[in-house]
Length: 325
Image 1: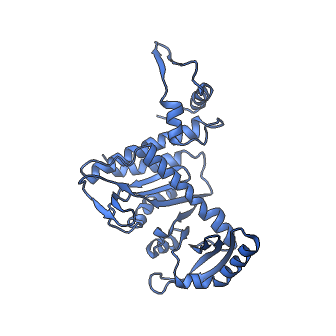
Image 2 (image 1 turned 90 degrees about the horizontal axis):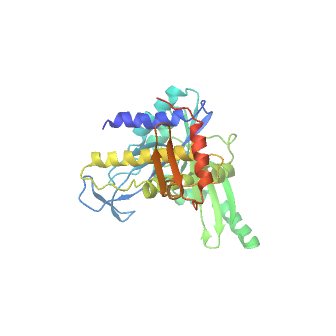
Image 3 (image 1 turned 180 degrees about the vertical axis):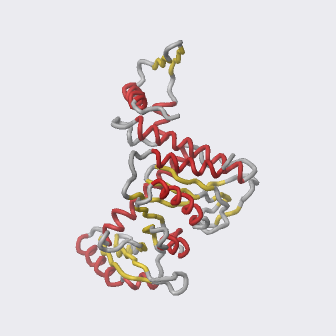
């Protein structure tokens, strides 16, 4: 296994899936637990997840997988992120020098090292990241929270009021940054949330930044679930970290193949938004008779197969794409 070549190839597939350079891409970052049940190398107990596990780092752009790195769980969730992004962003920028890049992640990645790296002139990367609430932040939106509470009492429906302000931590941040606070009051009470961003207010207002852009990162969790549950990324039962990283690569490639099938084969069908498990059950795990002749491969499906039309459409769509050697 040559891990560096595999990492480069994964990004090459993402770049090759675009007919032309996009104006902007969003890179979603997230970490998740990968429970282990033996004495594998790198075995540690994680207090938040409450089990012995690995803590793999995933990087997606929409439904495209760009990176999957197996890590020990006795680390900060953001550890190693800058190194992974240097590699991925550098490769993307060599192909698309002018593309705008925005990082999106939850508060587990809100670290000054990562934010400062994005802000460097040589990198030119914007970010929108969750920011863990504290007493100072909650106090900053106290008036907005009172307004949201008043609206809730008047209408009986959850109310949100946003505030755009500048903020700097007392010790951990090297500079002041833009923060958007969401003062929300619901039946269960106050629900304050915060995000930090490098995007200017003129480009994206507070409500749009939080509701339309930041909250959309939740779709990445579905992609991780697809890989872990449907493509068996959690089968990391080998003895060494290297062997388990290889298993993670294999499940990553399986996900990429399924995503390619969804993107190219299922286009304009009823299954074009289907998850990997649905595609496996309805298109791949089916009974058929296969006959190979000199000139053709014949696939005979059962007459009662309910997705015969979708299956035929997949074949036609895939045949429309030229083979690449």
